[in-house]
Amino acid sequence: MKLGSVFAFAVGSLFGVTAIAGFGFWLLAVRAPSAELQCDHLIELVRKETGNDADAQFREACIAKVEKTDAESVVRYADRSKCVIAARSLERAAKCDGDAAN
Image (cartoon, rainbow, N blue to C red; front, side, top):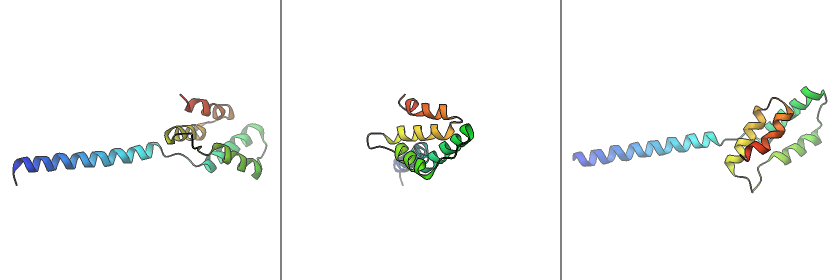
């Protein structure tokens, strides 16, 4: 093999591996917690702050509200979902919708 061919193969391979790794990291970055997990966390915050238990109807309504909408980008939904899961109070969780817009 000529030196130019070896060099081109090496550069092409390096580019391919970098592209695949970058795509994998991007997928991890936009991976969002499920609507069910978000609502379970919110129900736990309600229980902690008010002492009240939420019923199944509340959970179903919550899931319908926090699911990704067609108008919402995947990245924005992931940011909002991660914010809700990270919230340690209902007040902070309520601000997640506005924070995702920034």
